[in-house]
Image 1: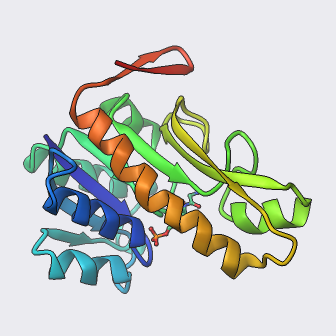
Image 2 (image 1 turned 135 degrees about the vertical axis):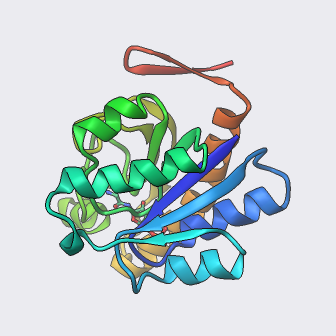
Length: 199
Ligand code: GAR
C-alpha cells in the first residue's frame, strides 16, 4: 500500500509515520510527502528519510481547485492508495474528496465533534473542559467532520498551558496515527454510515 502524507508545518506526526513504516509496524510505503509551504520542517524530515517531496505554493495557482489538481496528478503518478493529512492546514476541494473518497484521513487535536478548526488546543483550554484528546477520522467535504476511526482522551490539568497540553496531545497523536494507518493498510476498517468498525 502506498501513502501520501500532506503537511504544512513541523511534521512531528509525519516523523511518527516515517518511524512506523521504517520499523515495519505500518505495512505501507510513503510514496510522497506534499507541503503547501516551502519552508515547512516536514520537508526536511522527508528529505532525511529519503522520501520523495513535493512543495507547492497556492500563490502559484489560479485557484484552489487547480492547486488540488496538481496534487492529485502527483498522487496518481505515484499510485497513492491513502492520503494522510498530518497538520495540513488547508481544506481539500470537493473534487479531491470525491476522487479519494474514503481514502483520506486526518488527525485532529481534540475529541471531535468538540473544538473543530485550527485552534483546538487553545479552544479547549479556554472553554475549561477537563478532558480533551485526539481524533483520527476519515475526511469528507465538511471541516473536521468525517467518520471517526480512533480517539484517545487526554486529561487537562489545572496548571496546563497551550505548550504543556500540546506536548501531551502530541504524545498521544504519535501513537494513534500510526495505529490508524496500520489498521487501514491491513484492510481492517469498514465504514458504515458515520461509524467505523474494526475487523
Ligand atoms: C497536530 O497536532 C495536528 O493534530 C494538528 O496540527 C498539528 C500538526 O503537528 N492538526 C489540526 O489542527 C487540523 N485541524 P505536526 O506538524 O507536528 O504533525
